Image (tube, rainbow, N blue to C red; front, side, top):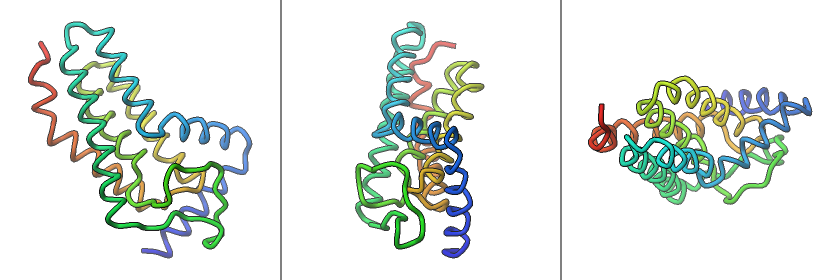
Amino acid sequence: MDDMDRRLLSALRDCGTDRRVAAAARALSWSGEHGALWLSAGLLGAALDRERRGAWLRGTALTAAAHVASMGVKWVVRRPRPGAQSGVEPLVRTAGRHSFPSSHAASAAAAAVVYGALRPAGARLVPPLAAAMCVSRMVVGVHYPSDVAAGAALGAVAAWLGAHWVAGGARR
């Protein structure tokens, strides 16, 4: 598993040698720091969709909770990020030293599930953007594929577990 993780990371990181791909991956990486893109999207949804304001706010809280949970797991597991020792030079700086699970992936997956359920446009727009965010973490060389898969699974499970709570205030 470890060898496959490193080979997949190397292949995806090689995509970052294209300036346009690297720029897009950096932008996604930056916008996803601390779940900022997803939290902003949830707050914007709450501001614009008065009918479902409570659901948007609960979804935003759930997305934040998924991010915080991933940081807790990271603190326990303490897997070092890929770096020069693994032959992967990162394209961005990170807020922390640990990589498992990816907090970017956790908040992205939670947002994709929660916001996608609130509006049809969210179901079309958020999942592809969330997937791009997940892939970007490997392109910039700061997460192994298993980090991203675990983060996405954690975020999706958190959203699934909280779906009833989020939907509780939404008018249909």
